Length: 337
Image (tube, rainbow, N blue to C red):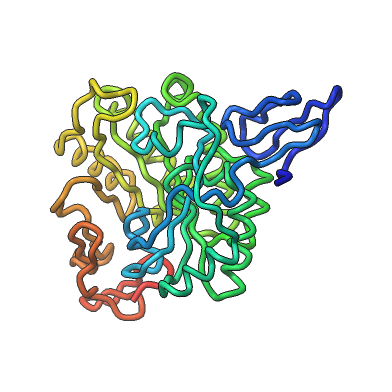
């Protein structure tokens, strides 16, 4: 399928405008993601409709704790990613196209995807698992049909898309969870083959678009858990995005090219959580730690537990119309019970 968001250059080269790599691609070659190829001066999306992962998830798995909590979301992905994170927790799905493997998967149309979502009684569709930016065309087409069928759309992304890509998605996307992997340009360059600043700019722009936003940071021992860096990150979220934005601190498991690193210690995660709260963030969560008390939502007004979670399951909430039943404080979010 012919791709979108690109422009022609001389000698049949093209520039992809989908993400902040802005790859210049010569005929017969692909961009860094490995899924967009120049065929005789025309950019093609090699992954359109090739579904590599599909299924129903609790929306809390994205993770989104303040967007339609307790509901199911129909989740999908193709292969590929525009980053090369050494610590990728889903490398078998995201990385093969970057090393020359053509994207593969079950062919499904946007109409078939939306039909399945409706049949599964999903309230939303999530573009997730790999990197949705690189299956933009499929995501946009599916999201438009989803809206027509009364469904919400969610993107779970590394946040490295172009502003043009975000603006194209603006009218049909409703919520995002964006990975803020570090607050260091060196980290993004050395560990991810990317840059930090475009991600920060996009986080601000997502707020301008009016989507519900939550942020996730995978805390990796010795790489992005420096106290000063975490303080700067927490201040950015609180001051530039707003204190209502939930911050998910996720435990690292050794994977992909970083198998020599230990699991993130609970002490480190809890210290990062304290940093977030001290910066003024109302909702700071710890993930990938079974049974953690810090997966619960506390009322910012009185401190009562208003949403208790065990894994991705949510107990009956102590809220009414989004307000705490103990003190009446209105919680932040969309579609809160």
